[in-house]
Image (cartoon, rainbow, N blue to C red; front, side):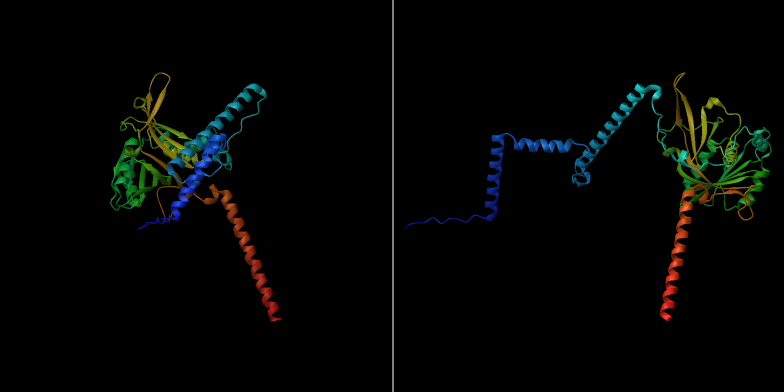
Length: 379
């Protein structure tokens, strides 16, 4: 018997693969023979990778690691360009000498804000007279010494209690009192009878310290602050050892307005007037953008020329809410100053007024159109 060979049908997929391989091989052979197209493509891809800023968007790269690498390269290239521009400007300034144009002043919140007309000169006669007759004159004349009572709101969280304890280590002659449902109107007379000069109350909300009432005794004033960004000692990195019992120095920065002057004296009267420089401790109240930043540091003398600082903690930020005459009285107290949005955000206030005016005008004309349409319909 004769056997005839039957041709086996190949799949379409295998045929497609073979044709693709043949096309690739032919293109590679042509490229190697001519020596141009393949090398040109490789150069183009390398140029696209190294060109900054890239011609494509970094968000198009799906690989996370490669996207991060390209972003870091892009940042590095931008940094190099900035350095080159800076060096070029420096050379031009040196070449011009005295004829060089003045440096551009950067725009900040401080130099762009509205000037406060209540800024006072500390050497003014009126200011000196007020200082001699205000509530803190007994302290600054050396008649009384500061004695502070630190307490909390009812049923405080352990974080608030720890914050009060650390404040008591910062302020000399401070005593922590755990309040058990007592009203402040009952606490204040007892403080006055025991010769306390200050009552400090730390309030909390949702287990986080968020307020401070600072009452100067016996005649006031009483300041209410918002507390934020509280960091205890254990939460501060590279902190120093616990503070000693030496009296610290006090630094008050940028308390230049009439209100700031009185708040600065309120803070200064918390600490004794004779700092003990042996302890190398300093408490800083820095006023910036109407926020008071508190820091507690220790000097580290490395040699005769170099001095370092080491933060001891705690750290927090204060924002004045109100200033009240006399001792704490939430119902019948007379307020010297209360925080208002229009005082600190005049641009926002103007925009709100304009928007309200436009809305009222629009509503007025809309009502007019409706009235005219009703009249025409009736006619």
